[in-house]
Amino acid sequence: MTIPVAVVGIGKIARDQHLPAIAANPDFTLAAAVSRHGKVEGVPNFTDLETFLAEGPPAAVALCTPPDVRLQMCLAAIAAGRDLLIEKPPAATLGEIETIIAAAAKAGVVLFATWHSRFAPAVEPARAWIANRTPTRITITWREDVRRWHPNQAWIWQAGGFGVFDPGINALSILTHILPGAIHVDSAELEVPSNAFTPIAARLAMTGRGAIPISADFDWRQEGPQTWDIEVQAGAERLKLRMGGARFAIDGVEIDAGPEEEYPEIYRRFARLIAARESDTDISPLRIVADACLKGRQTATEAFHD
Image (cartoon, helix red, strand yellow):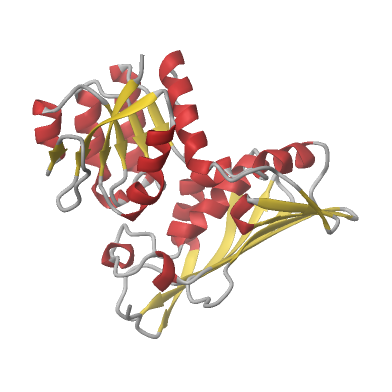
């Protein structure tokens, strides 16, 4: 028996990733779409979540809206007894996601706070490599072109929109997966455009496992080839994750990690969680972003225009 699921927020990420992943997964069937503007052919469409929950078919919910509006949506879906998958980042604040987690646990619904980059093919091999070694330094370089990946999306520059941490949290989700344990932010420098509330660039100095130095360079102004790299030094050995975890090399030797199936893997994981009636709600990447904003030194930079 397939699991009916409704996608809420029919924007770029839903059309590029969620809808194709659902269509390709025999465990799911698309039951409805909920969006103020977007529509999906062949299923019932609703303009707001409240109407869908009251009048739509019974279905799990995949929430793909910006994080700043998720709290009440999540609580409404949970109150209606719907299993819930949340796009990253799971909420705008730690307080909000903690409220959502507590509500889901009390209601007995499945909650999956997804981190799609953890499902990149080279991430698990990297985690296994690190498990048998003691890293001596980790360097993250995550630089991309905001105009290419978030065109005309004004919400990312507003309070609660994360700015460059929207892609940067992908790197942090990989970091916290391959290096379990506490990671502390020692310092942060945040460059904020004069016409925005969120950073366009950030540089973080962190410490993992008590002594491992970790640096992160996030920037949304890189044109041309994009850079999504994590390099782990362990004594004389070196592992490098590239292309957001899609590829990796050990001591300069490329290793085939397999095909890229981040969102198909997310929905496979969601199906297993529903079958087991379990939740997956790690919020450690969001905690690092919150700590960086608390400890960060802000500097103004030139205004950003799409």
